[in-house]
Length: 394
Image 1 (tube, rainbow, N blue to C red):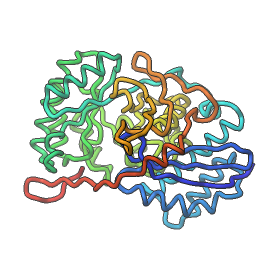
Image 2 (image 1 turned 90 degrees about the horizontal axis):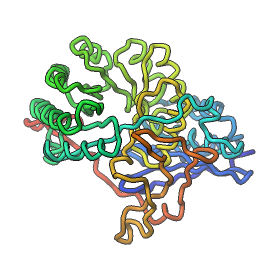
Image 3 (image 1 turned 90 degrees about the vertical axis):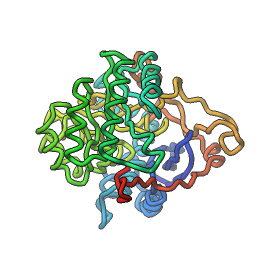
Image 4 (image 1 turned 60 degrees about the vertical axis):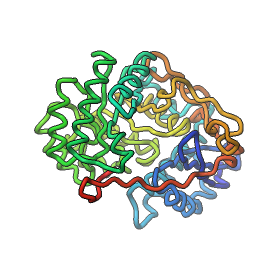
């Protein structure tokens, strides 16, 4: 089998921009992958164009060889663009291999390490009452772990102030805990916005409400600062959605800076790299809470990895926030209808867990005709400022 073409699509999947990879073969088997990276998708698309020539004529079943070729042939390598582009290629290659052999990808990764994957959903709102109601709705549908961010009122003003952020997150946390009771795990997302002293204050004030963990409390450029926070709180910490290879996770893992790492299969180098990151973390007794804000295609790749990797705790599942599974809407946003879903299906959810996808490969189909009707929407990179006008992290 030989690769005959490598294409990509900058498009919309539902309400979100997406970057999909399509790899065709002379055996008539086509593989799909997702290389979605928010805020600068054209950069990843450009690298996919450059990597195309490396792949044409190669055997798509040599997944590891092609991963190494795409990574190590780049003199300047690493970072989000490389991670996203190789992630999409890697997924598509696993999809081809599974389809060619007639088995789901998780079987190629060693089979089921678990029979289902526990999910966590999101709650959002512009007030404590609104976000608590959203969290209760998720919990009432059987979702057993819920993440909230807070900050929404300040985001709308383009502002981040540490003191106001801590106050709002604690207020929201108290309201959510009261609404959902003690049996739902609550994840406090911080988006890397706090300086150390404010992350410590947040952890102290959250403690009475028993958070499951605090996610990305600090900026990610200097992982050593996480060690200082860990010395000052016993609330579990998690980070890693902005990690783009095994090397970028090395310091976090070997120094036990966090309790959980959060690779994203669309960012970290794909299924192949996530398996390696997980195996490395396993030797330090660190579990994965997989970051995932993708549609059905990226979610499927995350699911296959989560089903086969032994040290996975949770999978992020934004699709459970809608109260139902994905339904393709004919006509799409371009004709004034509902946003068009171009990849499907999403996994079945039962009692807060996702069940394995059936079918060979990733088990997801990409509707290339629908893609043509849903071009990517240009979106400005969000900018937040402090009260004095200086730049803050989004």
